[in-house]
Length: 124
Image (cartoon, rainbow, N blue to C red):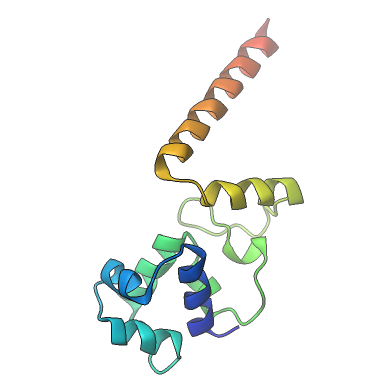
């Protein structure tokens, strides 16, 4: 898949219009359209904005292979191919990414509580 198609697929996955994505990136709608049609390629700063917004690596955007967890999952700012996820972990992350910020905060809180409960149970 070429970079234009990947950008478009990511954009549509968030239900964004080209105009909306252009505003996020600080470019014109026609520039956004040119990116998606491979008429032009985003500059390095814009590539970083795209990768950051969609929580993928810049390498993923240029990768010609189809999507897989190893292509797009990153930890902090570094991608770790040795830490491949199993199917359940990948599904959990996939669903998590679709949540609103408020829902993500709730889930994080629940995970922390479960971890703390588990840690205190193991000590006793």
